[in-house]
Image (cartoon, rainbow, N blue to C red; front, side, top):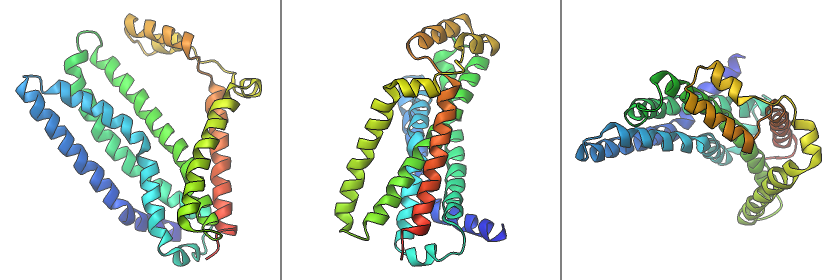
Length: 262
């Protein structure tokens, strides 16, 4: 455990440049929106909109962070893989540090979206409802980030594996197109199949009950009802995707541990 914590500490140092760059760009963007808002006498609105857009964009922060961190390890792969720790431990250290940086970045964007958003949603949504909506969105951004990054990790490990047999550029091209073909097959054809419906369409989440339970305004409850009619949500979808992501993570760890030789 002590060795893993030391590795986590190292990962915080390795990933610091990406985190600092993210925060600097966010501060610059917020300042620019504030200046724009000052000119039109509505400082809060541009900041709130920017916070929402930036927060949504952070869904891909963890993937970018992991690619940056793994690209650094690629330059010293012999040192990284000769660590006696299992590959899953090496990857989890990166995931933990990246998630911490994501949470801090997302909190900053959330504050901007919340306080800036009060200026343009105050007439239709209460502060309490806006906060609850923000928490729900916050959680789903984190969940999506953790989900997406595992696919990216597997793709990068496959790139390292194929690099042993062909030029890095060709390996990258194959993995890039293979990644999108896989996503098209899995998130497209497979998720439209009857088999997928059978294993995931259970535990339907009643958005009307959720909205009522959280004491949202009638307008938000009505929106939830309309949304549910077009896009039904099931607990089984979350469970299945969790199982798939865990399986893919351990496949990536096994490939990194057993097949990506130095």
